[in-house]
Length: 155
Image (tube, rainbow, N blue to C red; front, side):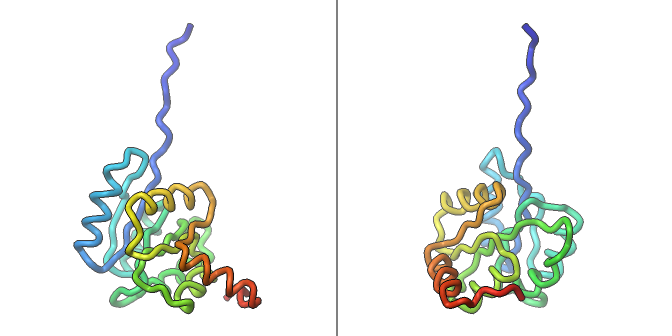
């Protein structure tokens, strides 16, 4: 019998984007504790996030919307159409239908509010990495209501 070497599955590479250092630090601390996640980089604004997304090729970008300079919406617009673009999960305080529908139209694969539990954040990352869409209950309701009204044409 051969001594088969067990290969560890590759870790999910994350880019964390938020303009609040304490939020970045908390996210990094929590996410780094999971053996299947790797925080590949951090950014405090959208311009820096674009540079790092292109250089680091993360699997998932965890993105805030409100940031100085290039905000999350502008980041999504710039990233759209890039062949190697990472999947984006929005993690924000904004629960307005305008933000939710705009980010989904721009290609966000997840939308969570900052009051999300740490466990739900991990589930969202794994689901989006697996090719699924993961929306908070508020975002789900907005997306369904918008779709029913016929309001989901790509931008």
